[in-house]
Image (cartoon, rainbow over all chains, first blue to last red; front, side, top):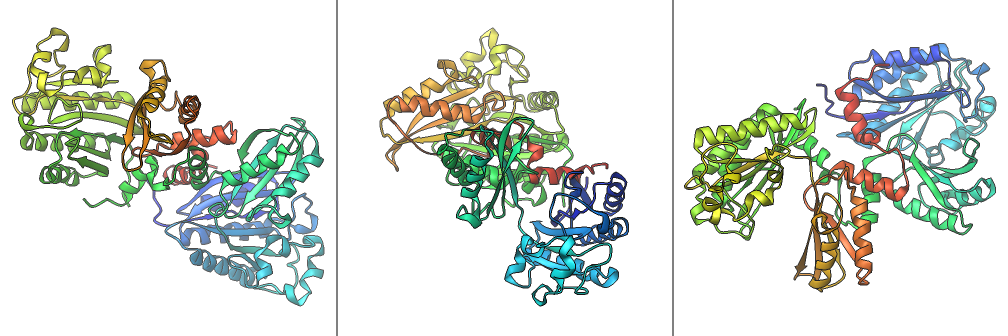
Length: 308
Length: 308
């Protein structure tokens, strides 16, 4: 049975939904020792491939470079169309500390990854999130402003000089954003209304930049198959802003319009802490931590024998 | 890093709270390879040691036999006093399937353990829970009726012939109960009242044998340090009777007396499934399973590489 002493999660986003390209990129991961695929999704609407995998410091960097080099070979941004904001073939690559790894370790990995991509392939690279070199660069949206189509113009501005590589787009690959961040939680809530105007008001009420909750991004969408609306949210720091708080505030804001919450789902995987916080809130538990969860306690006991 | 391919949890209960005896029993566990201590508690009031550990089939049985043999050497039931019902020095030993192990595996282990204890030490052994040989023997309380003090008299009854060993108590060790069962959840809820009569009514309303919820045992207690009452519960099958249902029914029954729930806690470890069910209920999630929990997904991906 395989184990990893240190665990880093990587969630690279590539600008492709071409099955043959997807397969070749995933194959680079598959052939890297001690790198393990968690999940991947791609669709034509976004024309984007999102991969999630884990490795240790060495294997995460190795797999990431192999996948990026392959993507640079196969993806041509000059012909890319898609609904998701993007500036490059290897659009964004976050390194996320999971276990026995610090945020600083992940920042170092992002820097190494970015530097290598610039030096060996001439791709301009921006550092974002915890790896950002200027406050505004923490924000992915700021870096991606103008997208691939206006990238050359934007990159010419002195305040947008990349952290590594040339100050102009790579001819076929655009630019790459890499960095380090905490695990995020994605959470979608379905509303018992088809009225997108109401859904947008509720999303706005929750969104941090619009006066809502810290660490929350929220957007409204209409779901035609069900004739309902949905609030799609991401919580960038669910330890500071726990999920129950987001959910209860959403119910309050929806209550203004007599709109019921009819269901919800995690978008991507559910971090254990979000579930523990929800259970603790609704059951009024004060002291529930991950190490009190039976399965976690067993894993911990096996990995590190408790001395009597 | 150590791993176990199969995981069995064992929760032996020994009739002692003598620190020197406790240490010697735990030492037998410590010196067993591939057996890992999770937790142990003992106190003078109950005069009882409860150990929780995990192992594979081989190590769980080996550790369990070593601990039991040591306990038989050191504990004399003739001088034992304590508030917890018990019939023997090695009072009860459940084997619990956790991972890559079936209930049948655990039943076999319980039978092996019981047979060995009877053959090599002359201790009469009853099988209970899923290992029971008659319906009434599934119930620990039925087997323990009369306790150690009336054991000889009870064992003389034909319907109480032990499954292994002689039909009379071991001179110093009484009798032992072993078997297999699912993981249980222990859960205590604090009530905003000091009135034990009300607490008892609420406990009765929840208790399965008194018309409450299936798989739930509930008892009321007064907590002098806080001048409140508490409902202590165990849920023997929390997949069939999820924790949120127990909690919501408790709130409804407490509401009759205008008694608020002021807090709660898991008694022992919290099985992941109980937390997932609570989060799913309150957030109205339909499809949340353990393998959607990030930490579990990572562990699974590492243990068993997903093929692309």
